[in-house]
Image (cartoon, rainbow, N blue to C red):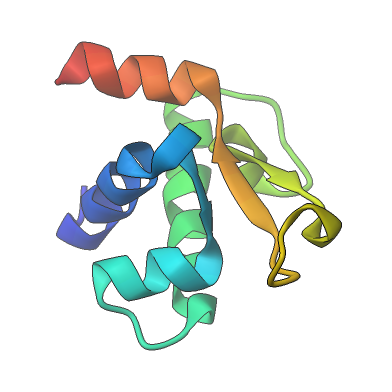
Length: 94
């Protein structure tokens, strides 16, 4: 796993309630723009889907996070909520 992918997972997990925005996650891992998070998390999610043999998802990233409407965020940004199954897996892996 590339170091940045691991860092994305760690920072997302450490966020309060495992919830971040792409912009805040980009900042915390050293990317200049949230588009890099979208791309890299998508690549990571696709790899996870392949490893798990998961059925084809329209968006691979749905295996990693659920998305909450911007109306629920005062800045109007989409909230990325880590799936509980992923959080548990990360805990088990240490």
